[in-house]
Image 1 (cartoon, rainbow, N blue to C red):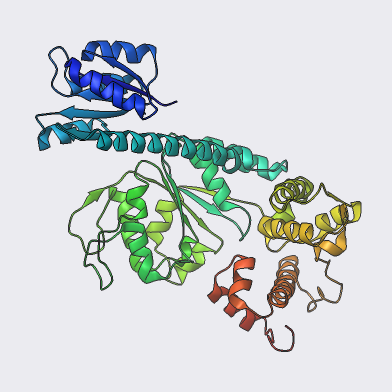
Image 2 (image 1 turned 90 degrees about the vertical axis):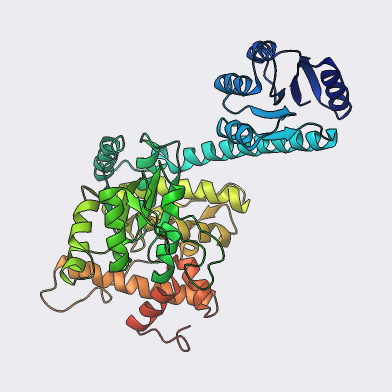
Length: 457
């Protein structure tokens, strides 16, 4: 049963509210003064406090302030016969849930109490989900006993408490966002927002609006003010994935945020202060982009104060069994399959395979294998991966190790795209979602790898 505390110096009002709210199913306590209400709230937790504003010993604003000092999440509703805008504004600034003017219909007060209870329930559920997410998206979620991973995680711990900009480098699928979340969770900003933006997934004309927001009328379809991600994340962290794909004109605006801690909404004239930590990531060589005049050198040095390179999965093969077991447990629960295991041959194949798509490809492979598996053990056939033949990795005479690796990656990517296109019956948009790349990138790779979508798919 939800508990309500009523504070009013008039006995008739207290008795009337206590009776009506009790009939609505609430457990009601009532007291005649603000001091008694604050004292009672110290001993007993109330879901909602309903207090008069004008009382002789302690007014409702003081009651609100003292009760919320003890319980910052307390829902306090103020009543007054002397309602003014100034009183309402002051009460709301101090955290009042709502403000009701006498005389009022008790059914309206009941509605406000119910709404306050629903909000508290929602906040409690959000906190639970946030804690659950923290347990799977923070430092503890990074799986790796490889010596290179230990070094990266040591550096994550070092840089996290500062406000230093971090640039995460590494191939696609290595888990750069996971490391960004870990840095946020270990920082002093962990209680604030972490917002991730994929700069490659949003068209350039929409990205500025997404990051910095816009004023009403800034463009044709702008019918209301839009708050951007930087404003929402104030006090927290913004993660800019695939930063190399950001348009140069927008790079200049980002540089201003990093240098001056201010920005303007699209179509606006007001300069707004913002306090965010920026973590950026790229799987492209930004120095090459600078040489090609596609990326600002001054922005690069602002972002790369503390660069961190995430090793590809092929360079940490000793982590593959632990990662595979982690994904096996994760997707068995989601897909509701009986307990499965990997055969020895399956584990050997996974450890020898090159994993051009890195951890993301491993995760997708395990999920697909669980769906395909019709026994209690996942074997090589369900993994749908194979090692390249000698013929496939044969290159021109004098080829170096880097070229061999690039050639193997090209072949593996081509075969994976063909396989997924077959699975989706040639649906490129669906295939792009499964491959976790945007539609344009898939189209470019089909062209690059000369994939005949009619004959081969």
